[in-house]
Length: 290
Image 1 (cartoon, rainbow, N blue to C red):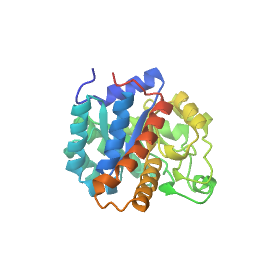
Image 2 (cartoon, rainbow, N blue to C red; image 1 turned 90 degrees about the vertical axis):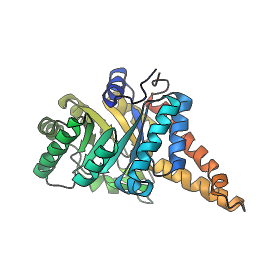
Image 3 (tube, rainbow, N blue to C red; image 1 turned 30 degrees about the horizontal axis):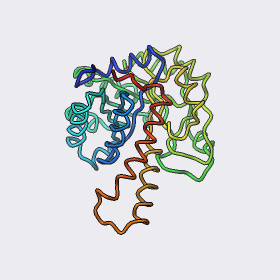
């Protein structure tokens, strides 16, 4: 039986060793949290619940920590809480002090040397509290919405991760997880992106850390499987949940005169839960909680 306060290192190490990935799902309200946890419990899978700075502000940082802890204790599941794309030291320190399990510092918009220096400092602070740090060299383009454009436009606006630079960055910062940009973008586009799997293999050979794939919502299943086989152990999902929530809620509002929120939202929770369950099955983490 997993511990009530599971060790993030053990969760990721097991995924790496056994060749599957952990789903990291963004949440900013109770409905999304319910959907993620219901799916994880149904399939007995470890999961990472994430909140970006804006999502954290919306629900409240202490509320997020308490809700995740409540679900962790109730279902006896390895549920980890991650700060997603923290961009300032203040955001990172707040998450560390509040009780987050994982910290993602995104310095990808900084000059490389400044990114190295700030990431190193944050890694030292997080490690002093026994927390794992994820970092980012190359900015992941797009946004967590549906885009009516071709995915190539977003891909071309960013710079793909270089294996040698990745190795230098990890060695100098001592981070635990590296976010890679290999064609993955935030959001869902008219077409699915093709990932540079050979580049990913090169990164995996060069670096001594776990690898994280952001923008997992818009990627075809076969590409996801190839990425996991090539070293990815954490995959972020946000847009698919947002779209499922919005579409199901709009349908509820259109078909019902009901005004009670708790009667309008169950279809949205169910729709998001189906998304999470499908991703858990795709990532190969079914039954890995026990």
